[in-house]
Length: 412
Image (tube, rainbow, N blue to C red; front, side, top):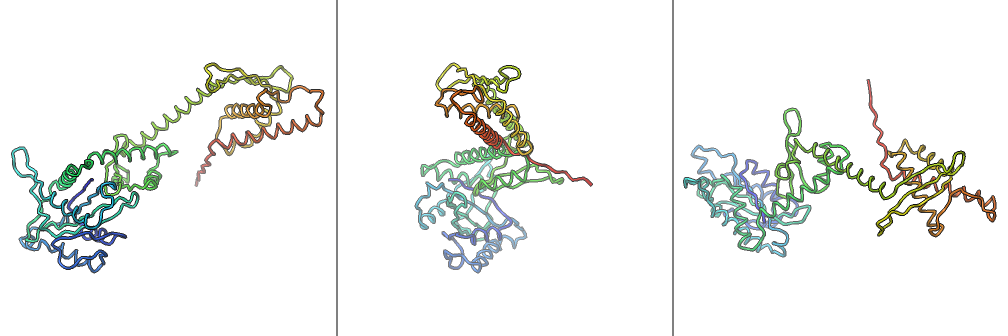
């Protein structure tokens, strides 16, 4: 279970959200005038807020204005911890949390009280049950008056820390995970999501970054300076909020673009290593058999699966096939990004693989020889099939490469 608490000035807006949110369910209240129902209406809302607003009338009459007149708290057991709870069980849990909050007092090194015990039990409060939109995890929203019913003020100094300690006290007694452990798990989840987003971005752009974060189900708030430059941000996961510095130092607003560049350098390096390994496993030599001929000898070494040593292959390919591959790539060069030598090697290798499959693995000499038992018409048909196959292979290889991005600039 985790918990969060703070004193707020926008109590009216918080109360409206907490009570009228779709599917919000009334759980319990204490010291409130009138009957509360499961379906809180706008009429109920007016009554609730008026009670909160004037609960400290005796205190305010002494000339001490208080702007933060409402304590807002969110308390969230995990889905497993609250599984199957009835409304009565949620009510018991809410009362216990209020009681735990009132037990906590802070003193400094000299023993002087730095944050007095609250008296929420004798303050006006109500609890509403919400369900997180992404995970469905249920959690309680507490609205608590800053003032007790007899006009005293609740000390909200370090109240966020008090909420965490109250949650951990209940966690310990129930055998549940501590809030710090849950928080670290959430931060690790967000960190992994942010790194995945950075890897997927072709360029770093805050608008793209924001959109992708929201697509993953998180909220985000940016902080900008007077020049509209992003100088900070925080991520919302349900009711938990984490500053970028809490998630990872390399993900702060000042460092995140450099992190994006580093990730992409690593990706390019990995691609280069993969290419080097490919070339190690498939060593290509492509050269004319002899000057003036229309065939090309294609030699390569390949390490087969389960073998430690490379196997050497020799493959004669028609110059017409090579030309067909080259012409097709030239036609597609304006639409796709590729390195010409690399796609030629891949295409010839695919051509070899397909033809050796067709011949039962016995090898093949493309466009070579003129066996006496083969008619010239059949040979012509076979040659046409080869060229058709070569063009299809070239198109397939080209389309596996990224498309070119056309950028247009406009001048006056």
